[in-house]
Length: 421
Image 1 (tube, rainbow, N blue to C red):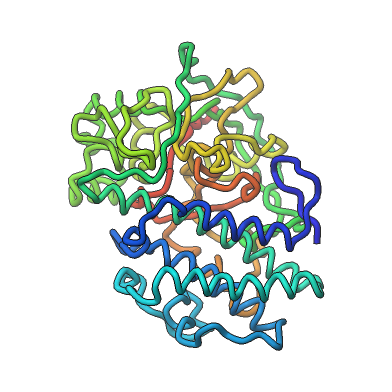
Image 2 (cartoon, helix red, strand yellow):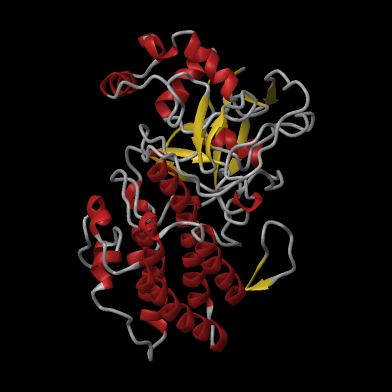
């Protein structure tokens, strides 16, 4: 099966994409110390070594377990500790206790990866069919999701350390000209189509393609910046109940929230994967919850875009931006202008939308255990769009639907404004 990557490389085989993706996971963590692999700083964060093992378990269970009849399971005990939420596959170790898994060691997990990689490569090199192609491609995309989670989880773990250690040194862009004032792009609305057509790989929650009627709307031509969000803070944004949803206001008060995650108390610096850095007022705001994004939008006399509005604007736009491949791992200021329409649609920050994560009309989850991948989470979560600065460039597309609980902040969550016409 040939897949085209987002950077327009020549066609590569699935076996080669598998090899590259698996190697990329180890490249991300090459500068960690052994102790860093084990820590779990909150229930939503998983230890780095657990991510490395779980993605391997996925291939072992769903690809090798079904198609490699001569495959020898590396260790039967791993099935329990590295299953995540696939209840049709059996019970699993409690998510909030993954940090207690001092064994297997990091070295043993690396051996586990090598063992599984050899078997998957042998399978892909020797025979393929549509079902193997689909499951292996799903596994590759699953691993890319966990690459992003590894980086955001590592960031949270390191931020809890008073030494403020850094994962890597990275140079950041600085804007050499004044940031253009936020403007809005007009869209006429009407009957539009969204969702994946199924011709290329996509997750089941992106289908089926369907029609939606939109009222005319306006969409902000760029992401909201740190400087603009600082103005919200300075205008008592966190102290004005009228700006907040009821759940959001309760969350703010119960957790004493006064600024985005990773900002210093004096609002001058923030923790990054490159250590503590001064806050760049021109860079996109990130690490805010849906509640904070919604409150900012109200303060700005606007709202968050629906996911249909966002996809309508992104349809046909090139998937280019500040992704993990750039090596900065931090949102960057807008490069250039917005003369050609909305900028920063892809990369930099996952954009909170105003849409609950729910099934599209006619949605059908995949059959079997992989049907647990997306469908069962379609309740109490909110859709995010566009990818972030730690998303692999060839992983996202205009139809891609990410989803998180409204209070969560440890991902690179940002926002773009929308308005009614």
